[in-house]
Amino acid sequence: MTEQTYQRQANDDEIDLVELFQSLWAQKWLIVFITLVFAVAAASYAYLSKPVYQASAAVLPPSLSDIAGFNLGRTGADEGGLKPFLVDDVYVVFVGNLQSDKSRRKFFKEFYLPSLEDAQRVGSQDNLYKAFNEKFSIKATDKTQPDRYSIVVEHHKPDSASALVKQYIDQVSVRSLEDVLQNGKRELAVQARNIEQQIKSGRNSAKIRRDDRTKQLKEALTVADAIGLDNPPVVNTELSAFMDGSLMYMRGAKSLRAEMEVLQARVSNDPFIPGLRDLEAKYQLLTEVSIDRSNVAVFRQDGEIGVPDQPIKPKKALIVALGIVLGGMLGMFIALIRVMLIKHTAKVK
Figure 1 (cartoon, rainbow, N blue to C red):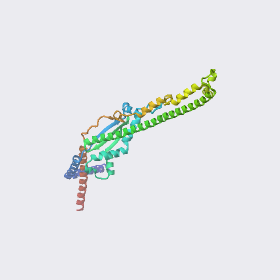
Figure 2 (figure 1 turned 180 degrees about the vertical axis):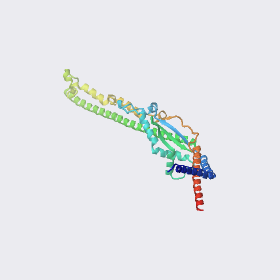
Figure 3 (figure 1 turned 45 degrees about the vertical axis):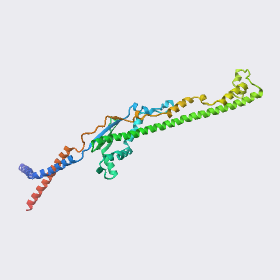
């Protein structure tokens, strides 16, 4: 192909582009009209649709002082008691309830649905719940703080959005607090029953030992009376070591009778049970534990829950701009189709 041929082809292309531009220019009012139609439609949607507001709150693990009240009566495993609650032990209960589907559905029925207008509650519960999950989210906010969670709610009313966030946190907090208290209460009750059983066993053993001692003294007294031994004879040290066994009668009738009368008159064996008072003190501590709910917490809220004053949807400027762009593109496409149809009709004629 020669240079003249290339030049001719370039001139033809230039003529075609000029012709295309002229054809589109001839259809400019059509393009403008379609662009305006799309722009007006986009602007109508942007300015007439209900605004959507977003409220959020962040939660963190409780402090040591927040959980100190949970550890009343928990003296530690080293002292034979219960292991104290740690921050993670308490916060994991809160996070579990925070993310559970049970908490979501309870919140959806008790708080979210009543916040909607009657027209918005029309439809199946499943569809409404799916729509709710699109407007409600819980997620870790920062990889450097994996224990920090953010609760986000979208709503057409700004005050309702912030109120719903607070209501969800309060609902989960109450449930989690009750779970921790019940877990601790059950553990304390089990520990108290164990100690109560130890006290009961100690008293039963003391009674049996007293009865056995009384029988031994009675038998020894019978022997002492039979041989007429009222007072113990003078014995050497080696013999005295056997006086609690079969030679107990060697103590003499007076001594044996006096001890037996004391044992029979004893009202309670408690003072003679080793460690009984310590067990009673532990039992009393466990059974009298009363936790003040106002002094404990299962989480900390990071900041206040503010009422949003700027909607996140719709983005009016973006919607209008997209409407103009799409309208212009569609207008040019329709104009090109119209130009092609006009040329085709002219060739046919």
